[in-house]
Length: 380
Image (tube, rainbow, N blue to C red; front, side):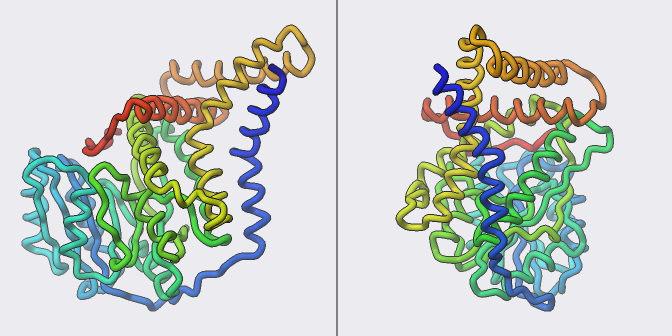
């Protein structure tokens, strides 16, 4: 039982500390991006929407007000059979727009991926950029994204998400801490070569690298992997900023994380050849460490806890380890039952636990063969 405990602990330390430390060391030999501030390719911003009447007007005006030449920009929206007036709002704004703004409609719900496939076919831009229906970009965000495409080795660029949570909500502060950790990892991975995983609310890629995907595939995850497969870099641009309201409802956050993780697990299966260390040793290490092991971290977490409880009679280090684990999950459980703003030292354990429980639920769904194709707007 001791070897299970120590092996689980070692694996967890590698996932959350060892891999970041390895990246920081490798990043000392950085691969700079040959960006150019005046690079202004033609861009098509693609926005999938389902029942987004509450936010779509603000999002479209945000994109129309971007600091980017109007004659080099178009906005394409696909309505996934929305029935709440989303389409009418888009068409009303399009009628008075100085930028080409066009609505496409899927008569029956087919999901985000099918919608993006349709929009890319109609896009005129050299670069296609992806926005969620509630994503508010900084005014210079698009310019900051596309300046990187002056480098011919770059195929995909992802921006930086900032969660807004003025009420100090539980999930909001926890998710912000998680995103700071992810953003730091992405900066190191960019210096090494390519990032693993992107933020789908503010991304851009070369249009000629886009590959149509099956409806059940996660575009935010699979498209960047296909760009790497094609021999191009996927990078993180921290100066391209997206602001999005954080969820203040742990149930909604949990459901969203389950959906994303489930689709990512299917994507890892589809792109498993990229985890072959003989083909792309460094990227295979990144994909396994940052994604596969992270999604499966609930297994060593559970093994460490259960084996620790069995070893309690041995006292010493095992007694201290058990107290630390029980205390950590106790704080998470207490935070779950609390109301109102809480200090970060309580929010982070809660959000860490929520993420790993969502991964466990998604893994169970994956083993059962479940698929998630359509989506519902985030609440909060």
